[in-house]
Every structure is written in structure tokens, then in C-alpha cells.
Length: 323
Image (cartoon, rainbow, N blue to C red; front, side):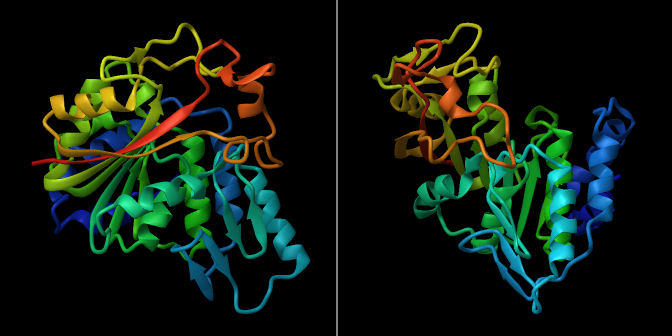
């Protein structure tokens, strides 16, 4: 199983030290809890991956690692098979020693939309809520963050993250914890908090915004990315049983309504910095994620609508500050 001891040691003398009053017990409870039927299989894949020290590591423009001497075809095939044992890969892409993980989401495209609007991440302590396999966490490290903590309860994502970390030389600038935001105390310790692709899955979106605010230092920055619909500050879509084939979608506000929600929770300097429709280039089925993707979730007769008849996925990025 994943050893969280190095992370505990890393935060023991910094602004996150008080988290150690609750975190180890929460992790121990998780370790004793119900495990996915494939967890042992995934864990074995991580265990058998070779420990690599990249000769060239690029986290600024991508998540890619190269060795000084190219790997043999046999070595590459061995790494690729172990990484394929961790399918489906949803967030990426990754390029690791000649093995290219072509993920469902081109998360690099989202990062390119977000990055120009951020305050500098240099030297910052960052929280990434709902981080998935950790792709954006590595890009945050590449942008200069001193420490990035990701939280996501999905066990496969933890194994994918640990696999990538192992191939990146066991880099300790990023850590993934198998927790949800509701399990975090009010830490008030992160310089920047990201919540990307999470809000519409929350039954109480305003509670989620308060939870995010409670993780930030005073003057800290929130980066929120979420589904939106067209409309004024009073427009909110409440889907039925499914939205774009997803069951757990509760509220999709307009970007202007989202801005008001943030202000209602006490954030200031709220800016809508990007709105874009999700394209079939950004989200699609690949050899590393072989089940249905966006093309199957849209109306085949009208791609401006989901197959349930709602507006097709559109996403907005908002930046806000905790006073």
C-alpha cells in the first residue's frame, strides 16, 4: 500500500503541521475500509514498475520524462503493459520514456486556458481538489509550486498517480491523498486552491465553496473550473436523472450566477476568465480509455445538445480571492 509517512514528515514543521492532528487517523481508517476489487491488481502494477530517474524532465510544457539512453523495446513494452493495467486513463496526457499515455481528456488544453490567469505559483503551497490521476498537479509543480497536495477518493487515481510519480524519480513535490474535501478540517493554509470539474457533482455547491474557502490563507487564490450554461445571474440548470450520461450532476449555473455564488460565500475580486465549449478534440475515446466518451454523450443529430436534450457541455474558469 501507499506509504504516506514521507508526506507526514514533509508537513510536520510547516503551515500544514496542524493537519497531522487528524490526517493520519483518517488515512488509517481509509486503509482499513472497503477496497476496490481491482486494488491489489493496480497496486501490483505500481510495485513492478521500475524506479526511474529522468535525465530530462519537463513539467512546464507537459508531463514528460526521458532517460539519457533510450530504453530497449522490451523495457518500453514492460512499462507500457504495467501502465495499461491501470486503465482507464482519463486525465493526461503523459509521455514517459517513450510510452505515450493518450488519455480521454486532453487536460493540457484546460491547463493552457487556466494558466495565463493565475497569480504566480512560484513557492506556493497548493491544494488540488478532485485531482484525478494528478496531471494538473505535476503542471502546478512545473509552474513553480513548492508543494502540491491533491485529494481524490478514487483508488484507481491514487495508483495512477503513484505509478507516474515512481517514473518521475519519486518526486516529493506532489502528493495525492485518498480523501474528499468534506473530510478536510478548516486548514486555512494553502496559498492557492484549485477545484476543477467538481462543483457540479456536489449536492450542495455553496457548501463546497465554503469548504474551499476554509482551506485558503488570507489573500489566497481560488481557481474554480466547472460546467456552466448560457444565461444571466439567475440562470441555473437542474438536470434530471442524467446529464451527458453522468448520473451525479446536480446544479449547472451560468457563469454570471457562479460569480454571484462565489461573492455570496465571501470571495472578492471574482473574475470570469474563460468560457469554452468542450470539443471532441479535448474529450474522446482512446486506446487508453476505450469506453464511451463525449461523442456518445451528445445528440447525434445536434451536437449542441446532450443526448438528454440539455445544452452541450460548456465550461467556465473563475478566479477569486479570499479576503
